[in-house]
Each structure stands twice: as C-alpha cells, then as structure tokens.
Length: 281
Image 1: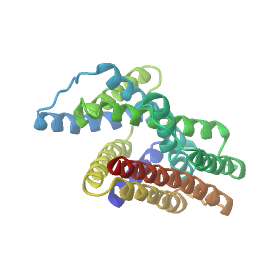
Image 2: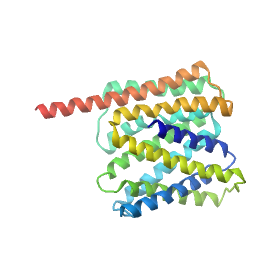
Image 3: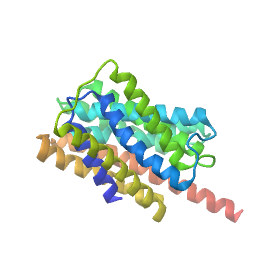
Image 4: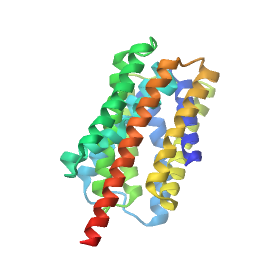
C-alpha cells in the first residue's frame, strides 16, 4: 500500500511538471497508456471487452473521467498536498451517494465526522492565499466523481470483470480527451513526452499495488495507509515545487484526514457489530 501511494504521488508530480498542457490532453495520454495495460490483461484473462451492463459501465467511465480531470486541474493550480487533501473527501461522497444508490445508511455520528472533514477543507481555503474557493470546489467535484464511480464499481462487481470496468474508464477518458483536443491542443516537447509516459506508468503501478494490497490484507487496515500519501504530497510539494505549508494549513489537512478516517473506521465497526448480531440471532 505504501508503494501504491508513492506511485500515485509520483504520477501527481509529473502532472504538475506538464501543467502547461491542457488537462484533458493529459487525461487522454494517461488513459491511453493505461488502456494498453487493460487490453493485455483482458486478453490474458479471457474477459469481455464490452461487458453486459453498458449503461453503468459508461457512467462509471464518465464519473471517473470527471474526477480525474478535476483532480488534475487542482494539481496544476494549487499546492500538491492541498489538492490531495481535498481528494481525500471521496469516501464521504461514496457513503452519501450509497444512501440513495445502494440503499445504505449513515449513522448520525458519521455526519459529525463529515462536518469535521469539510471544516478542514474550508480552513485551508481561508488561511492559504494560494488556494481559491474555485479550486476548492473543483477538488470537491473531483471527490464527488470518485465517490459516484466507486458506487458504480460496487454495483458492477458481481456482474463484470474488474478489468472490464477499468477499461471503460480508460475508453471514456480517451474519447473525452480526443474531443477536448479538437478545441485545445498543446504539442508536447522533449521531456514532456517522457513525463506523460510516466504519468500513465505510475498511475497503473499505483492501481496494481492498490489491488494487491486489498487482496492480501483487511480493507480497513489497508485503507488507512492511503493517507500516508499526504506526507509525500507535503514533502514533494515543499522540496520540489517550493510549496511550504503553514501550521493552519497542516491543521486543516489533519482535520480532513481525522474526519474521513474516523468515519470509515466507525462505519466498518458498525457493520462488524451488525454481522455479529445477525450470526448470534
């Protein structure tokens, strides 16, 4: 899991290094490279490229692409650690959307944790002059897109191969990038091509390490390690991009992490108790 968060952090670094290239163009190359890995994987697994529930597969791709594009926008325009912090709100949106989409419930105390996390984001926007509320909104929109995409993945998990779900995401990203590039295109030069290649490679490596981690260890234990990425974000942003953080900014980040982690752990604990009660009954 630490390798996964490090790989994603490196991908984010290279996104910031090509900030002069339009976002959807970066999304195009990122998804194109990842799609190559998906095609190879699908062929080896003998799985379907088209799937069965095409509407949900397409929607998963749309929300995933929305989340990716908004996240890349925030990386380009605000400090790396801040962009990553706002993206950490995605589990909250996952839980809220699941109320309507999967008919799940949220306990009253979890809303307090959600308020704590959003309070941390608002604190960052208030104390950090480099962060406008426009990009806070785009970061929240990215987290919402991730939450919606994750709910669709959960809906599809019993009917579709995981690589088929990922493949649709890459295809939608490629198509969205192609359409966007008709209106905004910046020809990559020299090292830009290398950075774009590394964005795709490290994003895919991060996904592979993430999948392996969840397959070998309890989800609750693994999920907490995700937030170690914030340490990478603060360190890399400070040393490589000259993005120091104030005490209040770091406090806001900590509030976000505490709010989200507390909500996730509490939610998992409630599910365990409910399972025990059902077993006993």
